[in-house]
Every structure is written in C-alpha cells, then in structure tokens.
Image (cartoon, rainbow, N blue to C red; front, side):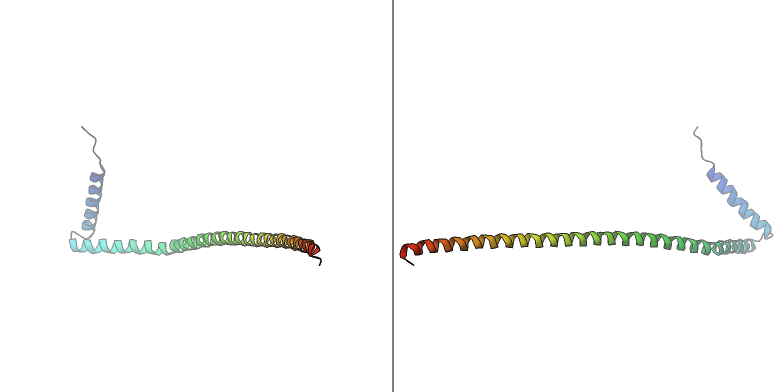
Amino acid sequence: MAARSRAPLAIGAAVAGGIGYYLYAAGGSPRAAEKKFESDAHHVAAKIKGEVPQRTTDVEGSARRVGQDVGAKVDDAIDTVNRDISKAKSETESYAKAAKSDALKKIDELDRKIEDGAAKSKSYFSSWFGK
C-alpha cells in the first residue's frame, strides 16, 4: 500500500477547527461568526500593511541605490569608450596627416626629378640645333 500525503487531512482539520472556533465565539450564529472572521482578517491585513510601507521604503531605497550604482557604472563605461574612440580618432588623423605629408614630399621629389630631366634633355636637344 502506497503512503499517502497527510497534508489534505491536516489542512481540512485546520479549516474545520477555525470554523468551529468562530462559531463557538459567536455563540453559534453563522452571521456573527462571519463578521468576527472579517474583523480579524481586516485587523491582520491592516497590521501587515502597517509594516509593509517601511519595508517598501527600504526596498525602494535599496533599488534606487542599486540603480544609481548601475547607472554610474554604465556612465563610466560609456566615458571610457568615448575616450578610447577619441584617442583612436586623433591617432588616425595624425597618421593620415603624416601619410599625406609623406606622399606630397614624394610627389614633389618626383616632380623635381622630372623637371630636371626635362631641362637636361631640352639643353641636350638645344645643343644639337645650336641654341
């Protein structure tokens, strides 16, 4: 025979005991027992609500602090990325300016060589024709 859970039996006994207590306290009147139960339930709910706002405030404060910490970390990460991007941009611009300057120097040197070569060949051909 399989072992059965005794939880339903215990819950049923507790409910029956609760109903019996309220009926006994109300003198056997079901309507009075219901009013007494509602009164007790309201009292317990008010007590719980009285304690919850303080806890809610603590939770809200904790959540706010955690949110601020996370926000600060995100801001720091964004600042770091922006700094790195700015640094890489300036290094790239510097490299591009240096490359452009080198290219212009090479072009000027080549241009001078071509002009010198043209001047020499002009003087060489001029010497043939007597100028």
